[in-house]
Length: 350
Image (cartoon, rainbow, N blue to C red; front, side, top):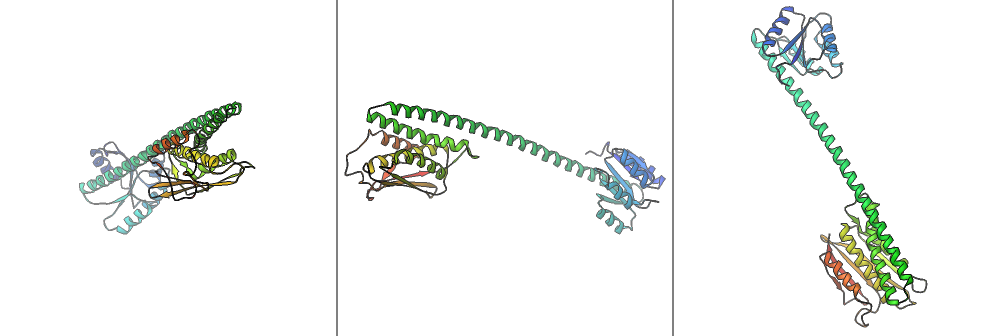
């Protein structure tokens, strides 16, 4: 706050000094009101709106310290300046300990008014800075609150979008299932079932997104667990049981990468369930996911006869899908020739 126009209350029982203060500080731009004692000063401060109050120490009845304490009891008091004699340093210290913003030692001539003006300016500047800080903090709080609302709305919108996408994919999956049930040709029926598994892999990602607080990444261990549970229900029967075993470390991926990874796992597991073990025989497929430096390492393996001792089966679409999904991850699918069955290995970045 600028000193010019600042409203000051000066409390002093010395009438002559009060008038000198009024004139001297008036010339320096202040609007000065006067009180002859502590009680009158408190009454004026209670009813008026002052930017600053100066209090003399020696006054009859209620002295300066008592007046100071009473003024501090008012709601939101302005800066309080204490006025003492030249040999009263202990009183000045007591006033500062009691909460006075500053003090001025009385002296002769204009030197006292210059000192008073300097202290007034400093006190008013502190008020200005304090108010500016409070206003900035309030503005920051409002901005943060508004930003939080925007983020919440965006997250809610993303969850709603993912929810609708998941529902749409679920509907498509149901239609494909009905089509598969109506088709007599085994090859066509198998192709539709494979397509349904691919749709489920994508649906699982969106289901995780709209049921999670984090709409930017997917918990891969949790996602694969749900996906493999559905795949096991699809491919495991009492006559030909297929056990799917998942061992996964804590890894999070973006939704796009999670979809690609899910489709790869779905294709590899489906191939293993269909081709690694004979009809009527039990079989196990193991899926491992672990961190690998800055990326992740996925392996899918079975205990079947491997790939080299049997002719290629299926239409080859699955291999193309796997290759395309691996390419989207910036990776390729390698097969471990040293493994007795089939072991597919995918290294990918996070």
